[in-house]
Length: 199
Image 1 (tube, one colour):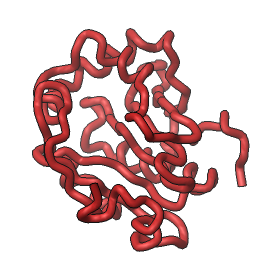
Image 2 (cartoon, rainbow, N blue to C red; image 1 turned 90 degrees about the horizontal axis):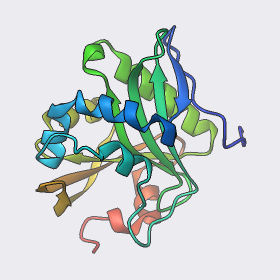
Image 3 (cartoon, rainbow, N blue to C red; image 1 turned 180 degrees about the vertical axis):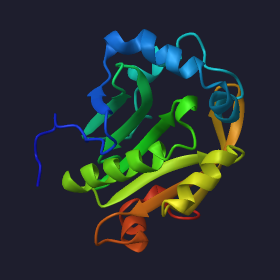
Image 4 (cartoon, rainbow, N blue to C red; image 1 turned 60 degrees about the vertical axis):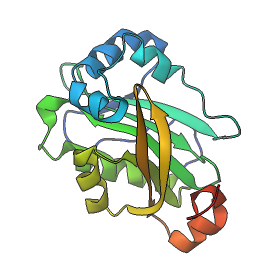
């Protein structure tokens, strides 16, 4: 098993390399976000704020949550331009649970298959680092996400109401995909907050 926490996932699409995004990449990430107004309107009820990238790169987990490592990944083409970004937290809430906070592909790459390829590479990398499940949150009304994630094998384990995000209050789906030998029941036994009816 790969135990070096600094090794990043690879991208199997020729010409795309993966880098870790840092504070010095804030302006570029901000520009990337501002070119995706539909996503931010669906999730936050408004376009990306002027400090969206800064807040994301410096973001903290909710009180009482923990993870072993947070990654901000940038996918760069041969011209060194960002074509996709990913935020993923290792061992969020429990060891073996990797949470995808964001997977966003630049609009010029929509319908290219990049998102699916990127996800497959990300999943293989996470498995190599000990992940048993991938977890994410889908905002009800973000129709692209509602269609995309179930096609990749994610299942809804919990619906949460009243989640404030930006200018709106959302209903969200907590979705999980088993990627090792352990299934959904084992996940719910481990992550109590995602059980239906839990506080």
